Structure formats: structure tokens, C-alpha cells
Image 1 (cartoon, chains in turn yellow, brown):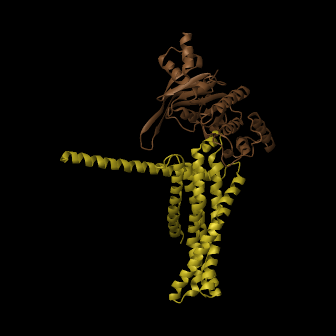
Image 2 (image 1 turned 135 degrees about the vertical axis):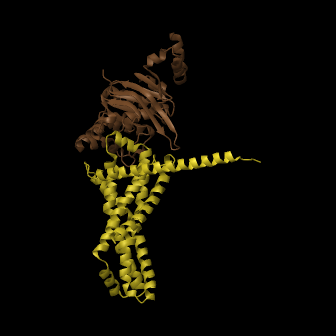
Image 3 (image 1 turned 90 degrees about the horizontal axis):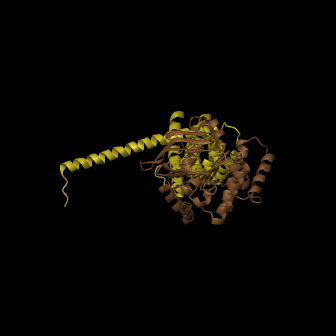
Length: 278
Length: 261
């Protein structure tokens, strides 16, 4: 049986406290350094948009990848979300005899909230993860180093077209999400539950204002920028990320991390933008 | 003759992910003359690839000065750095070809990005290089469809496009069979003779690169263990150099060395 003297206990507690403090300090330094690195990355990514020669073909390729490639998933999610909103809304509003406001409820919920958020989450899961993995693989296979050795700015060449494409495409996908969602709500509310078609459309037109559309638009632009920033940044810095491991494993871990971080960032910024603009 | 690259008391250390500090280079100094071939040898983790990255300012030294053509590369702006980097051609260990581009686009990329040549001029130059490196007919293939040796040749073709003054080869024959290794080194010798660039070869394969070298740098424990030309190394009476020759070159050079004395 071990007997620990009072002095030894003191030393153990001191060591544990010191280690805890050291870990806290390390984590703080790492977090500050990581945030700084990501801020500089965002700056270079945005500045790269204005650098010449302009990579028009790459921009079109990214628009196709982020935009056209996400159409199916956006269609499926928006249609089902709109229909669920239509049914749930009808069920709730029916209790108060306010089914006539269904069009207004569905359209405002989609335009101000669900459209931008769900579009960003879907694009992050589909295109963001792919961008992160692509850059991570390019980094570990020295392709980004090769660009730098050829005196080619990797931000202008690789990152900026993705920034520009996302800022352009995510609002368009969001608008599409809203339209299909509202139509889904119409199918569920009007065709299935028997709400009057006129009251659904009239409710929508009378309640949605320009400000609501602006709110949805601002959110979609910010979310588009956020998702590309986080996903490409994580992939670009795959070697610097603590706990990511090495090689293919590091790419897979960082990709997962990027999607999770993007999802959290989208939800946090959703609240912030709503709080500021509403 | 003024050196094209000069390292003056360069040190570099890395902080590991566990927080530990590892000093990779410790006050290292050497020069590279124009047109010369320098071989950097040493065990794994001795700072060979770090030395190449420092030359390109892909990494910054903790101490010391690195000059390229007399310019301190760590005190220049991004535009001047881009000009300095165009003096270099680099062949990476894994060739570092862009996976999503076919061979032709990979080779044409430096010309499209760094020159004002027309697409027609680019096509002519790329075709000429591909022909010299026996890659004609493979222009439309993607890197994944090529063998390791062919990928290295495409990497070399891309590195040669901007007519570099210095070529850096990072473990250029890793993963290749002996026949392909010989072919790659013959190709280096031929292209160097044609273009006249200085070259720096990082390699474990000392017996193969020894014949190409004008000077050999052996890194050990962050310091330069040997810095001499091949003849000096071969006939040196210093014990640690004899040990280096014996372990890296095998018994052939060892017996020559003994007979020579």
C-alpha cells in the first residue's frame, strides 16, 4: 500500500495545476495563431480576386461545380422542407383558424431563415468538403509548393475563383431554394390540405417585403463567403492544424473539421445577421 | 566567379506538434557556383529538403542570410521574390504534377502564368521540350495515367520551361527502378549540358549522383559534416569522410582509396 505524504500531495497538485495552465496557454496561443492565419488567408483570397491575369475559365468551372453540381440536392431539400412547412404550418394555424396566413408563414420562414441556412449547409457538405479535400491533397502532394516555386500566386490561382464563384452562386441557389420551397408549401397546403390558392399567394405577396429579401440575400452572400473561407482555409493549412495527423488521414480529419466548423459558423452568423438586420 | 546561391550561418528549427523544438540546420554556410552540380546528402530528417525550401523562401531561416544572385531573399518584397523564384526550376520528390490537368497543361502552366507568349508560341515550346524528353504522344494523358518515371520527366519538362538558372532536384529518383534511375540521371546530365543551369540534387542515392557532382555537402545533426568535391572525398584521409565513403559508396571506392594511398 502506498502512503503519500502531505508534501508529495502538494507537489502532485502543483504539477497538475501547472500542466493544466500550460495546456490552456498552448491552446490559447494555437487558437490566436490559427485565427490570425485564417484572417490573412481571407485577405489574400479576397485580394486575389482583383489580381491579373483573371482566371475566367476556372471561375466558370467553380460556378458549375458549386452551382450546377448542387442543383439536385438543393431541389430535394427545398421541396421536402417546403412541403413539411406547409403541412406543419397548416396543422398549427388550423388550431387558430388562421390557415389563410399559411403562404405568409411558409414564404417568410424560407426567405429569411431556412433558405439561406439550409442552402449553405448543403453546399458546405457537398462542395465545401470537396474543396477542402482537394486543397489538402494539393498541399500534401506539394502541388501548392510547386505553384509557389513557379512564382504563381496560389491565392489568385486556386482560392480566389472559389471565393468569387461561391459569392455569386450561393445567393442564386438560395433564391432557387426559396422558390421551390414555397412551391412545395403550396402543394402541401393548397393541393393536399385544401387551403385556398388565392389566400396562400396573397398572404405571401402581402407579407414579404424588400427588407426580408435583403436579409435573405445578405445572409446567403455571407454564408457563401464563410463556407469557402473555412473549407479552403482548412485544406490549405492541413499541415498546420493540430491533431490532424499526417498524410491522407490528415486530409480526412481536416475535411470533417471544416464541414463541422462551417455548419457552426453559419448558425452563429445567422443569429448575428438576424439580430443586426431585423 | 560570384556564387549564384550563398548560405551564410543559416539556422532553422521547427516546433513539433507536441511543442518540442528540433533544430534542423545549425549555422550552415556554403556556396553554389553557376553551372555547378551540388549534391546534398545525409540521412532522413537531416535538413536536406529544408535546405531546398529555404533557397526558394518557402521557409524562412531563424538566423543567417541566404542570397540568390547577391540578393538577400528574406528581405525582398513579393514582386522581387517572384523574379527570384523564376530563376529556379524544381523537380519535387513526387513530381508534384497538377492532378486535374493533362500533361500538356501541366508543362504549359509556367509559360501561361509567367510569360506573355501567345498560345501558338507556348505550343511550339512545349512540344519541343516534350519531344526532347520523349513524352510526345502523352500530352492528353493525366498524371495518374503515367508511370513514376514519366511523371518525373513531365515534372522536369515543366521545371525547364522558364529556362532556369538553378535546378533543384528533391530526391528525384525515389520510387524508381535502377534502369529508370539511370535514365533520369542521364537526362539531368543532358539537359544541364544543353541549358547550362546550376543544379542542386538532394539524394540518398550517393553512388549514382557522385559522378554528376562538382561538390558534395553532407548534412549531419544540423551541421555540414562534409563539404568537398568528389575527388577530395574519395582520397580524403579524414576518418569520418572515409567512413562516409565506405558506408555510402560501398567497397569499390574504399578499395580505390586504400590502393591510392
